[in-house]
Amino acid sequence: MANSGDRESKLRLEAIEWLSMVTDNGRLPLTREEIAEFRFEGEKFRLIDQSRGIWRPKGFEGALTIVTTFREPGKERPYEDEIGQDGLPRYMWEGDDPFLFTNVALRTSMQRQMPMIWFVGIGRAPARYQVVAPVFLVDEEAHLQRFVVAPMDASAIIPDVVGQESPIQETMRRYLRTETTIRLHQPVFRASVLRAYETRCAVCNLGHYQLLDAAHIMPDRHDVGIASVVNGMALCKIHHAAFDSNILGVTPDFVVKIRPDLLEEIDGPMLQHGLKELHNNKLMKLPENKKEQPRKDLLELAYERFTSAGAA
Image (cartoon, rainbow, N blue to C red; front, side, top):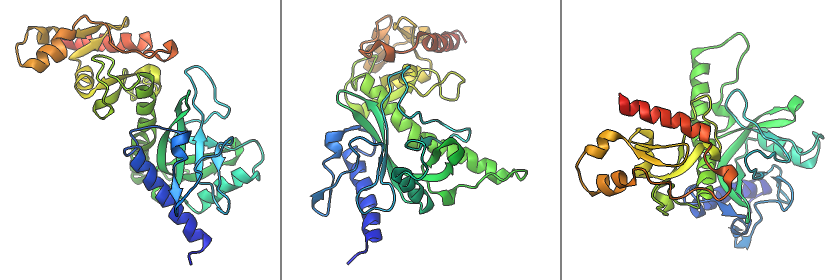
């Protein structure tokens, strides 16, 4: 008979595999009711606490899941998680006591490098969560009462050594930032934007999530390229590519523009109906919550980029 440690390890892996399956490999957010459908060894098994952000199931040694509460733009969460200078997210302790059982459970998961599940809130009514898994706690900043979260275990991370900066460290740091963006930040951004746009393309109203992307208005590498729904638009793959290539622009008043030389070009039906006929049309879909609509200053910067490209 498997011991409790083997059972815990088995459950973690099965939960992560199940979540990957029901979310179409992370493309679909889940409600609490949907998360509650997980079964282990034939019985329902809870993956999320009813009131706490940290969940350690009965009999487990380490925490299994963490939750970040949804926040509308401009509002604070009960516990404000941050991104460190290394590009890795931080997850706050519960309260101030380092020996509170939930904080001890997180510390155990960190020390034993147990794979965990992160439910990131991306909407409410009903509450919906983007699943990010697996994640690992790779360090604790006790003076700031928080843990460091990474998309890979600590063995893949080379610690900084004061006075001994090396090319390997810098290469690993860039790799870690890239992996963190791909595995942690991008899925949450995508889910938040698609939820705000009710899974429809802002330009053409296409409603199939498999064909939709969350487009950054200003790239995340830009100083103002914030990872927020107000810097995003839900776009189908054609219009996303057109937007990023400066073939299609959007004015600060939400009017679609097509690059002038394309308007003169004669080609097949996609160019005619998918692009040229959209010129001077208003966006067909915007978030109902005005606080989640694209920020006009970001659209203005992107539109300046579009007009400059057309004049080149």
